[in-house]
Length: 136
Image 1 (cartoon, one colour):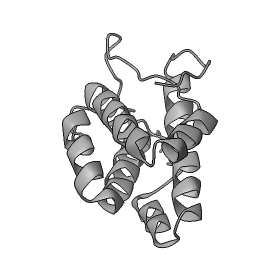
Image 2: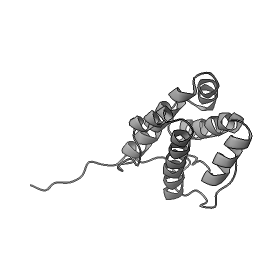
Image 3: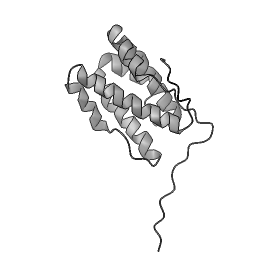
Image 4: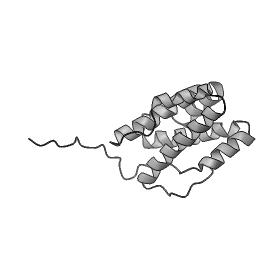
């Protein structure tokens, strides 16, 4: 009797991967725009996650949630990224509980953005995205 791992789900070759985004620029632009940049960031990432993994919420939902009840975004996006990794047969770098960083004013948001964007970037690079980060 041999232990063979279960088959890993494979995304079709034409499944779009998202963009690798600069962590530093994301934080910088979020600060100087008084968090308006986070609205765009949430929209773009939510849209890319939905394009790759149809079970996601999508960009418009993330935009509205981020504008209206920002802390919820921190839990939902962490959950989607966690599922992204699990469905790919990989151990997730973050889990839904990472959303609890919202409890620490300012520093918690920075820690969360660094970790979530790093996890998203690494996933996209592993699936063929250009490793050179962009702003948008």
